[in-house]
Image (tube, rainbow, N blue to C red; front, side, top):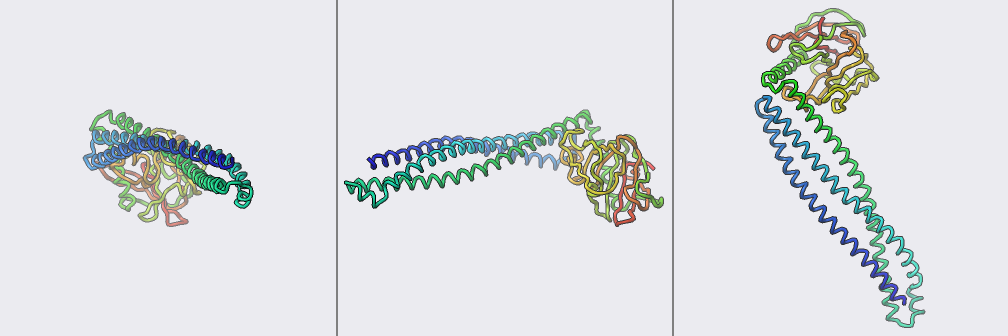
Length: 391
């Protein structure tokens, strides 16, 4: 009787592993299909990456810029599909792991009690004393050992499945975050293309005019930072004193009303947000539209008062900005050496620290005269520059 029970229990163990193998085989077929899709997507992604690199090396024309937007939009769409396939593949594995975890846990919980009881009844010495058939005793004990070995293997598989499940849950969350970021980028790229076509009205001359303004501004700012501007000393100013006013509307080397604010030491510029005080009321217009949430980070963390009165309109940050990545200015420069801000309440411009005030200008492209003021700070080697202003 004991031998029959052992055989039945061992057969149940084998049946469980056979069912598990069947489910795993179905999962393998699903995974193979998904992985084939991923390989195809990776191949298409490489094609569009090469296409974008080729377009960037060609002449800066409106049609070329639009073609770049189209290629970037297609590339981002492919990356979204790739991430979705990865999530699908991972989701299939996670679902199977949940089923396996439940099955393994239930199977182990039910059999461990049974095998424990049988092992107590079938201890070698007791088994030999109580058994009338030595061959039957040896066979029963052999089956029991096989069952216990299967249970130990089951426990190891359960522990590994639990660990894998936790790891892949984390991977799934990371992929979901990556997917949301990619969708945000896609929206920004579509908005940037639409904005370009609106500004230029699909006119090559208007596009070249935009490029000329951006190029003129960049060259003038670089020259001013290098000390090539013509300056005159005004005198000492205190912190918060009015030093100039912001030009209303576009100017010859600015596409719109703003102050280009620079923090400098020698030829080196620093992120103004490291010095400006947080907590100011602002509107972030540095992305695809005001308040879109896809633009540059507005992250002041210093102690200086702001050079303009709030509410602040923030249109471009420091460094590798959204505009550099998504608009035509990326063909002019790759690094923004200040921040672009404007006041929604006043045109007055203030000194952020006390120091010596200089008024300067630089005549650049097409005779455009870029005016600026500079304050050489009393308490450090830093100075601040304020561009696109009147004095």
